[in-house]
Length: 419
Image 1 (cartoon, helix red, strand yellow):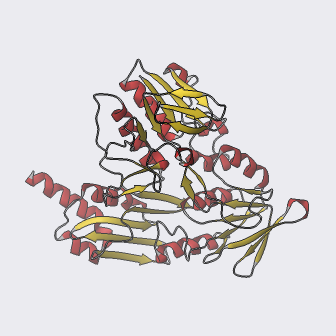
Image 2 (tube, rainbow, N blue to C red):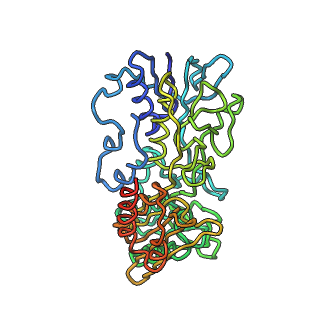
C-alpha cells in the first residue's frame, strides 16, 4: 500500500506514525510545505521568549526519527489532486501516486483588508520564519502593535509581554478572546492586561498602516488614535488550506467535509486537523475545530480507517481552549455560550479576577468557562464529556458553581453504585 500524508504538523506526524504501526510494510510519505523539520506552532511562543531554542519546536527531536520509521519526508507544496488516477501534483511538477491519502494541510492566517498590511515590518506569527523576524524586531523597549486579541493573538501577546516591549493591542470585538469568553470574562482579561502595562483597544480596528522613516510604522485606528511602531503583528484569524482541492471533486465547505470515519467524499481520501470539518462532540454538527488536541485525535482515527481491518468511528471532539494571558489562565469547554432553553450558573469576582460560568441542558453540563480558577478545569471537562446526569446537584451548582468537584465525585459514585 502507498499512503501519502499531506501536512507535516501534529496531525500529519501522528497519522504517519500510526500508519507505520498498523501497516509495517507500507510505503509512507509525509509531505510538508515548509523548509523545516515537522514542528509545532504551539511551541513558537516558547521560542519567542527564549525558553527553548528553535529545535525545541520540532515535533520529534530524536535524530533520524522518520528515517528509522521508514517514513519519507518530502518538502514540497501540493498544488492539485487528481482523484481519477489517485495522484497528486507538487509545485516542482512531480506527480505522486497513492492508494490512500490523508489531507492534514492545516490553516493559514487571514490577511485583513487593511491598507499597508504588506509593508515591511508587518508580520504574522504563524511559522518559524515569522518567529525569526519577530525576534529581530521585538527588542526590549520596542513599540509593537498586535492586531487581534483572539486565542492566537493572546498567545502571541503573552510572548511579547515577556520580551518587555511596549505593546498595544487592537481588537474589533468588544472584548478579548470573544470566541471563548463572554462579555464579563473577556473584559476582565482586558483589565488584567491593562494592569500589566498593555494598552488594549477593543471595539476598534486598524484602518491603515503607514511606512515612516527609519523602518517605523504608524497604525491608524478607527477610534481616531494612531500608534507608531517598530513591529506590527497581524493575528486576526485563520482559515483552512483547501484551495488546492478546487478541481478535485472532493467536497468542501468551511473545511474538508468528512463522515464519521474522517473519510471525505472520495473513498480513498481522508482529512484531519485544522482543515477537517469533523463532528462536534456536543452538537453532532460538523465544524472546523482548529486546536491541537482535535488534530491529534483526528489523525489517530483517520490513520486507522485508512488501513484495512481497523475501522474506527469518530465520536466527535469536545470544543476546548485553555489560555494563559500574562499569568491569568482562562478556559472554555463545549457549548460555553449556552444552549436554547438551557440554564446557567455564574460566579463573578472581578476584584480577584475569578470567574466561573456553567451551562446546562436539562440536568447535564454541556459547557463552561472559567478565569483564574484552574483547579476546576479538568472537572468541568470531565462532566461535559461523560454527559453525567447531575440530578439535584444541578440546583446546588446554580447556587454555588464552585461545588463542581463535589458534584463530580457524588455523581460519579452514584453511577458506579447503580452500574
